[in-house]
Structures are given as C-alpha cells and as structure tokens.
Image (cartoon, rainbow, N blue to C red; front, side, top):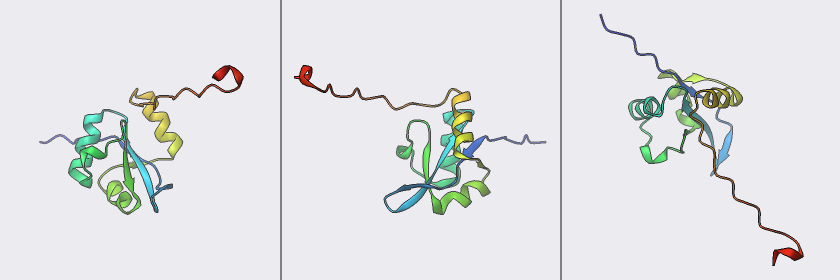
Length: 104
C-alpha cells in the first residue's frame, strides 16, 4: 500500500497588485524543497521566480494551486505560519540617509 504524501503549501488571496494584475503568495511551512517541488509539479512557474521565501502566483493560477492542494489562508495566517516555521526571509533594511546640517 502506498503512502499518502501530505503537502503543507499555503496560498493567500490574490489581492496584491503589480503590473496590472493581482497576485497571491505561495509558501510552505515545512521546507523550501517542498515548495519548489509543488510549484514545479503543479504550476509550471520557473524556479527563478522564487522570491527568497515565497512564489508570487498570478490570480489566474490561484484556483489551479488550490485544486492541486495548496491551503487557502488569510495573508496574516500565511505570515504567522511562515514565521513559526523559521522560513521567513526578511528584506534587509536600508539605513536612512542622514539629514540636517550635520549630514554633510
């Protein structure tokens, strides 16, 4: 008897606008390897589209991702689970430029 593979891939609602389209975030709260495997097998999104801890998924692929097993969650739940798994990659902060007379 074969084992059932449990995939924990999460997707938020496509509400993030960019270049005239709406996008979702797709993450795994288990591993990046699981996320890459899911995307390659189910969505045909190129690996180069990986954003450090997530894939941006266009609105037209949202239903396909859910049908393939991605769990729909609110954006805050997605972030909470990504942080809890230790898989969140934060963008580096750029220090603010000095202001005022002492700046230069």
